[in-house]
Image (cartoon, rainbow, N blue to C red; front, side, top):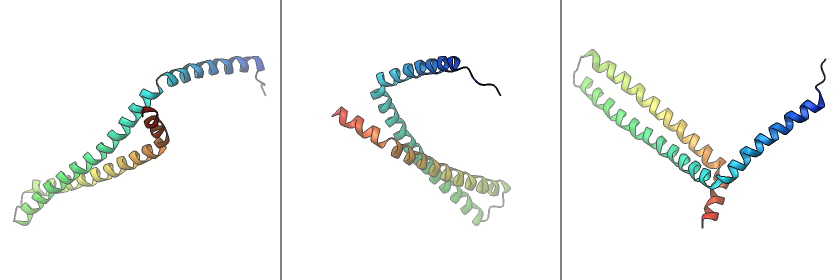
Length: 123
């Protein structure tokens, strides 16, 4: 079994620490801007989820219209295809909206303390 050289490990560790210090310095310098960007991104995830729900509602209304055409006696095969396809689209959009809304809640809860601290510093 090969035993690593302690000097080589020390050099690698020092190099990694230097790289991490560079990253942390950059984070420190741009912290306030990054928090604002993060907050804006979290809000955009919220609006995207509700946009998906609105699209699902529009698709549902469209599917309802096609369904009503079928009930009134339409025998076109395309109407049946549209009904199935649009209904599937409704399900996909609702599931995607729920998944995105869950992601929003996770992000909001994960970064709530940081965002609150930034708001206090701003005041």
